[in-house]
Image (cartoon, rainbow, N blue to C red):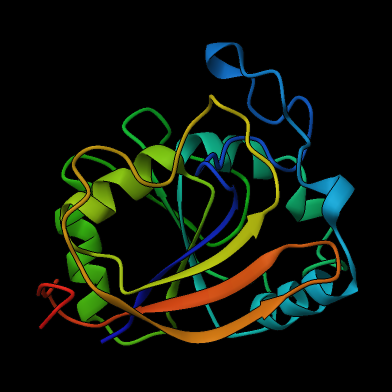
Amino acid sequence: MRKVIVLEFMTLDGVIQAGGGRQEDTSDGFAYGGWQAPYSDDIEGAVMNKQMSLPFDLLIGRKTFDIWEPYWPKHGDIWPAINPATKYVASNTRTSTEWEHTVFLSGDVAEKVSKLKQQEGPNLHVYGSANLVQTLMKHDLVDEFWLKIYPLTLGSGKRLFTDGTIPAAFKVTESVVSPNGIIIVNYERAGAVTTRDIAE
């Protein structure tokens, strides 16, 4: 069984929208695209290189696919694993592309991802894809979060955790703070939420 691993760049207030560029995703009037770059440093870069070099298939939403589709086929030298990887794209509107090894998932995406998890193969890495991530979390399909938490707040934008997220416990498997204040932390599912009084 393979895991679904959500990799996100996020602000302190949970925004994951358009960290990579000013015009990446301006939906709903989002005006802070490109908030990520001013904080990048060698530690964050090394972690990303390590994570991008692992065996993986991609699981992404249509909007993220539309952003990546014109770029990555021409820049495989930056991320050699991206083009050979199978790219599963959740979409009810796209059915074809020239980007090799792409499979479109329509209809009940949660059911299809559940079946993908049962198959042999590398783990499924999810980048961006805010709407898809909400679906995955609501159906308890996320096994791990690999987060890069940046030292700023934006007040608006698409957020990682919203209403409808199921209660779940996690444990930290790796963590480091970069020189520019990026908290880089990996969380793995650790069963159900437990409660008790502080005095117990």
